[in-house]
Image (tube, rainbow, N blue to C red):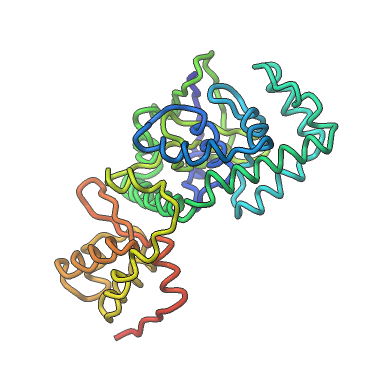
Length: 339
């Protein structure tokens, strides 16, 4: 299927990159990926951990988000917020909206038998919402810090695109494999092989949302009442980090020695500067801290190995951003003095 998204000058002015992941958009991508067999080296260990722990309610929720096909819009609101806030929003969906969303899906594909009573049966709805919460706890929650770190690193690259080439470069380079910018139209290929679809933004602009669990293609989300968004796979510039990022976050003792090595003024100042200027280059970092580029590179390497910053290449320039661990360390234990 090809989406052709039509932009006006007003749409280009309102196009932006999301500041944080959208929890249920990411969960929807994870639910699809769990049911597939893509990227076995990266994802099969994650799938093996999840499958034996799927409850009946979780499988119920999975059946509404098929590997290939359509899923009801109310299950994945595009609004920002904590996972708990967005899950609560889903559970408060009006019955009229559920009726409308399910009827739209029924016109395109067969629905599970139980789904016929979804809008009218409170017990069925509770089972679905419980399953969605369980899937979040199983598929996303153990890896959320890593997900947000990868998201932030990709966003840093997109901000560089925006600063150096404007919205047109941002659209052209977000995901060249699946997205093609042919002004004033953004063409998006998806894995669904159906007729083409034209989406006119009509002044709403577009929100770009990097996704960790969307492993191929790109997806378009248009809820009509909110700004449409396009999700696309995050970039991974480090193959080894890519292979290990979906591991449960239990490796804190492993980094204790490395964190202890940071307890010097200059290196702590480097970490604080990266937190204050996410996406800074090594040259910019050196100037901000008043050290040489070679020294800035050395300190950044130690910080990166300790898991306190992430470094992306764009294309040959190193861009440094803090990780969740680095930000937490600064927030709880360090307030640098200015010299």
